[in-house]
Length: 473
View: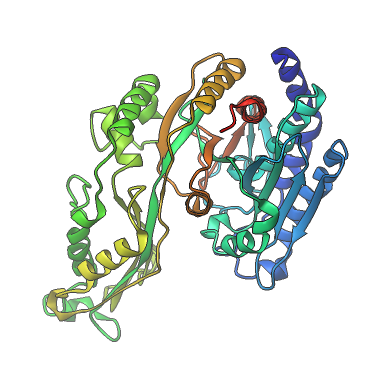
């Protein structure tokens, strides 16, 4: 493969074809079903599917026999399914999603979730980096290989529309399409992050999540605080007390031992190496307010906190008026939405049960305590890279970025990975992405770092080519 020719093709293809389309994609408020229960009526998801379909079909004209189908199971979000014949019976499965997180407040003045704005190397707006670019990057990589007549395996591309809601529709599509998917020997996922913009980052693990709502009720209705305080316990105080069963409020360490695992030695060493590469970026990639300090001094420990240790976040509250509307009333209840990130190898359903037991047993002051959780979402731990893939990753990073690859776990979840790991235990995985420092997926001012998008596309092309050339068992 001619690296300079690959770079030139990808650069031009991104500028002339991808960026105009992904700019229009950002304008569409196609929030995931969890955040837009009326997504069918609103039609935004359909708009996003049609936009990507209209862009993708002309690209597939370069591949005889290639097909694109928008698969629709009753009552479920649509899925774009692309099959591109190859030079062998092997299969490479490439994955991404097109649904988005909600707007969030705090965007820079003049910026917004549905306002695509290119500033220097960044394209701002919701969904460009998480994960609208995936279908574009996948097909660009295949087009780049075609342009040089580089042989490759058959490729299947799946773009779902439910990932930000936990991918609850995806198992039905995988079962429905399993014969057409085949038995992939390589899976490429473009929905992850990167520690910096200077090298290719491979994700080695993903944390799971146990979430639910905790409600503490002390009254059937609110009463005057001057009359009741000192007699009726505060629901907020009792909730704070209950949360201390889960989390040490001073250190942030999780107290439930059921939520810990033994971290594999290889992942500890990789965390140390990643921390050495990133340096202060481990910390300063986050918009700390004022003099806020991180939860530990040692950077490798922070990496392990983020990737292999359980952590609690309270992500929503109910039962309270806004400050300007708060009267002198002792409120009848407090409700908090809890999100517990879990180590990659913890079984999520068991973790949810452990949290429920800890919170609901022996309620303080006899208050009515209820934790409503779901089954959670288990994480994922990558199998060891085959020698051919480890070599290809090294080569791809050097060619595309000019630096060695780096390896690190991610703190978030990609439900599809765990699902595929169970169905295809002998498959090799490449999990990477463009969500680097301050790219702020799910938050305000999310952006796609365009040069990294181009370089990841080049790397994917190289790894697909290496997959075809690998020694066969």
